[in-house]
Image (tube, rainbow, N blue to C red; front, top):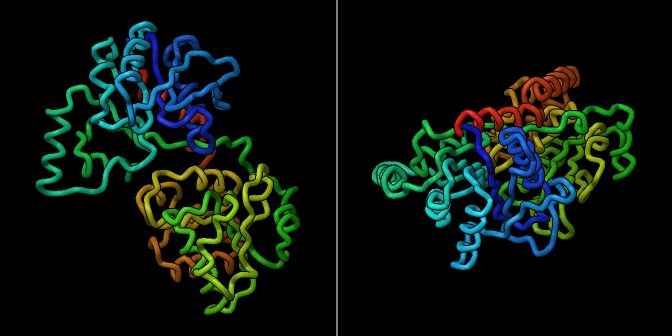
Length: 381
């Protein structure tokens, strides 16, 4: 039976951008297709304050301010009244924990089915008695828990099952997808990245995209750059960081010195596909946690091989040795060797670039993502 009304729940403020904004857009399209009517789709955000979400249509009004991670008695009452007044019978929430206080109330007010979509680790790994107790808690002490848990990668699902104690039968994997029309090779823009950042044309550019969070392995890539320059004596490799905020790079100065002229912190840019077209390869050296990074898909969609660490869901974003290389997380020398080996094999790089673009087109576009969400939600309502 299809849901008559669906509430999409986001715990962040309404104006949040980047990856969450892309998820909001995908969730909205999924909900419209499942319910059959945009008026049957509702959203809650942790904070609204008169703001708007760029990922939702102009004039979208089915909004509720509710932070399910830090609910108050007043906000819970408002949440329950909203569900009852609008006849909400399905909830699809981002990172909704098993023990969320709002779930029992939602069930009492008429919600039949709850989906919890996880873009981050649900738990650390557990084993033995602790894992057994987690399983018992989920099975018997949380009767109002979500019915289904959706993860972006097999690694994140594994943490939900072997860490939080979820039943595997209640879990689903839906990979994220990229806008392949926006992120596509643009050979006419090849020189743009060299011109904008004054990078010598005889250098191959290895690009990283995202904020400079330590869990993303930024320090490892910088150490690899230092090793390439100081120990391997190479002058033909340049590391470009895109997306860093003002001042973020300062925390990483200790990790390089000789490589400084071969490193550029490019900041936030709006014409990423054009800039990527002049790059040689991408790199995601994560060392903390990572689910299924969109940046890997975007770079591959633009025709870049991507070198990634073997951490959690990151290696699932590439086809090993065909669209990218996988190296041990935290191993700067292994990363340096992988980068140089690709620089020294331009023909293989071209083969991998073509395979990367084809892989995205054939299975990791936004359409693939939304279709998968529609399929898994509609079949379980």
